[in-house]
Amino acid sequence: MLDIPLWKRISIWALCALGLWLALPNAFYTTVERHNDAVIEIEATGVTPELQADVDAWPSYMPNALVNLGLDLRGGVHLLAEVQVEDTYATRVDGMWTTVRNILREERATIGGVRQLDAAPGFLKLRIANVEAMPRALELLRTLAQPVQTLAGVGEMDLVFASDGDVISMTLSDAEKAAMDERTMVQTLEIVRRRVDEVGTREPTIQRQGTQRVLIQVPGLGSAEELKGLLGQTAKLEFRPVVRRTNDPAVAPGPGNEIMPSVDEPGQYYIVEKGAVVGGEDLVDAQPTTDQNGGQAVSFRFNISGAQKFGDYTADNIGSPFAIVLDGEVISAPTIQSHIAGGSGIITGRFSIEETIKLSALLRAGALPAELTFEEERTIGPELGQDSIEAGRIACIVAFAAVLIFMVLSYGTFGFFANIALVINVGLIFGLLSAIGATLTLPGIAGIVLTIGMAVDANVLIFERIREELKAKRGPARAIELGYEKALSAIIDANITTFLTAVILFVMGSGPVKGFAITLGLGIITSVFTAIFVTRLVVVIWFERKRPKEIEV
Image 1 (cartoon, rainbow, N blue to C red):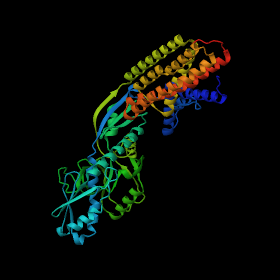
Image 2 (cartoon, rainbow, N blue to C red; image 1 turned 30 degrees about the horizontal axis):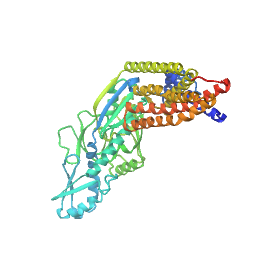
Image 3 (cartoon, helix red, strand yellow; image 1 turned 120 degrees about the horizontal axis):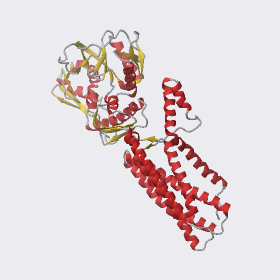
Image 4 (cartoon, rainbow, N blue to C red; image 1 turned 135 degrees about the vertical axis):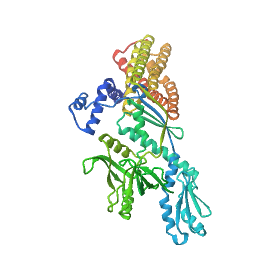
């Protein structure tokens, strides 16, 4: 007969209470949002009376996780950027010149002098003095090649060498270029995410689109230009050897060199080597600071590898200038006075406070490995987002009311029990969305509306089975028990197939499709739980109290 153990009853009500408790902050969205923002701001800048008032507006013992609103609901910026992955080929090859030169100099007596020649981007060309030693030179250089670290590149080497008379050319293999493309995209996604997080935006969407594109959606940001300014800078910090200074921008820098303007000295240019001694990838920290004169500056610190390379170079080149290069401009070019150990220093210049904060944030986030070109941009105003919210709210209310009325008219008291489960179901959906930090979009609202319509399907199956058992002259208790037992297989079958569809949409889709799939999938889970457990528990409690001789469904 109808019997639910006490431990199971407590567990069911506890899960319902937990879900509704987690969903509660969304009923006070603005207050909780201000509370969360104030907590973060206090941690970053310190407490103020206004911030403390926002913190106190929501009790600390209450949950504060909210369902994040997506771009189409909150307004914000949408960008589609293409990553110029080919830029990394030239950077990699140019950086090999110092290593190539040093390994050939070890057998200078045999090979003779080595001189770099002009070459197309992505190629390194050099001329050796003794053409008869070409086989030995190639043998030495091929020791620099390493296996490509991908499954598709098994058996391939990363560098390809060729000779023509006394000229040796080096480039990357096709397998290594493909591997670098993948690494560049992964690194770009991570650095873009870090940069967006640095400015405190809430729940951005950063996804890969195709092979070379990145989709960036930042809710709450008011200008596409602001986001482009943040992402468009490569923030590439390098320390390069200085060849000489010049005031003629048209002078030929020579093979293996390039000419760069000076930031602090208008009209001055520096000819520097293409290969960097230390790069931004070795940075582990950067913070705004002041120099000895009280001017604005940025302090930096290298990792162990970068500190070692920086220390070795300064020890070997005392008295020589070196250039601090940021995004193709020479910030400063001090002369090395002594061995610089420890791997830390400061970048000085004509910075404002805002510029030092921004520069340090960009350096901490890391240098973009390649340039971004923006193919598509949209700014969605908050008014459009508010209209979407209102439309979604109206849709939910209409769907909710229609289902509630239909269930009561169709099934009477049992329909009322189903409505109780439906209210709990919607609360559980928002509780789960808050707990996992999901972002709600307009398609997500559509998923909730669909869930509301589907939530009563299980109850309809159960109630119709109970009707059939009553027609077969079963007693009330037995009819209810058989109704739940016989409808269970159909309920599970229908919801599993729909859940699998939601999983496929989530895996194969992107952006709005994922939002729809998440709310649909969570709605299916909560619907099955409320239909099988919550509704049954409510019916059992009612039956135990009323003990009706006859029931009408």
